[in-house]
Image 1 (cartoon, rainbow, N blue to C red):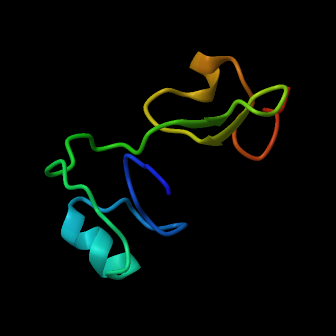
Image 2 (cartoon, rainbow, N blue to C red; image 1 turned 180 degrees about the vertical axis):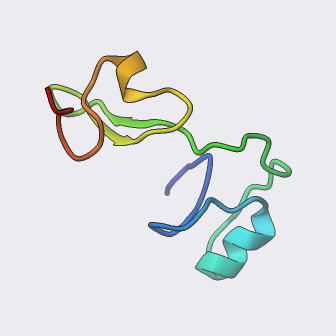
Length: 77
């Protein structure tokens, strides 16, 4: 089981509706349709199982706002 607020293949934009999820990933999954996408930016994703936390994807909340390194490693000094 996987619960997600968005669905997209790596490097592609997020789906904007349930029909796009089914088109992109096939019909062998259950899609709970909460209506059209309301936000324009994908969410910020942080791996909190690692120390220090690792930014996996920057969205509306930036690495700087979180006080952690950007994806791919520390920022240059």
